[in-house]
Length: 131
Image (cartoon, rainbow, N blue to C red; front, side, top):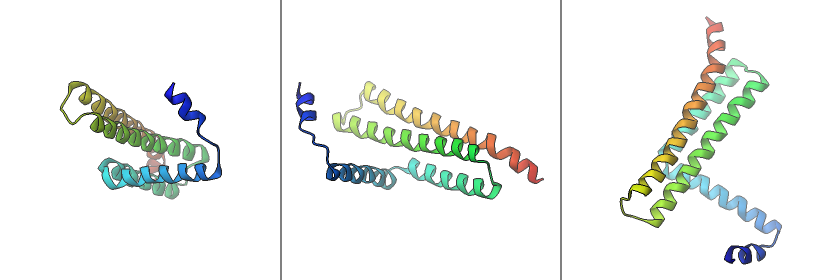
């Protein structure tokens, strides 16, 4: 009931739209300031983009790589959100808190492994052709 009332009070406006962008950027900045894994993914993404430019990959390959990189970033940010929420709810070491944090971390890990495999599938043939 409370959420319906809360949603009814939300007015569509350009100011609200700009605020949502501001809050999103604040979340991104927080993640990069506080999460080492986001830095690692950021550096990996920059390297993949540089390699894609150097190897002159196709449009479709660019699309696949960019989707993979964005998925990794999004999952990593969700992992950060889940960890912050668990920390807000309890400071105790609780088995369910561990499951939530470990599962979120595992999702980020799996997405990064898949993105790496995608990059390897795309880049290796180009690299082999150089020799």
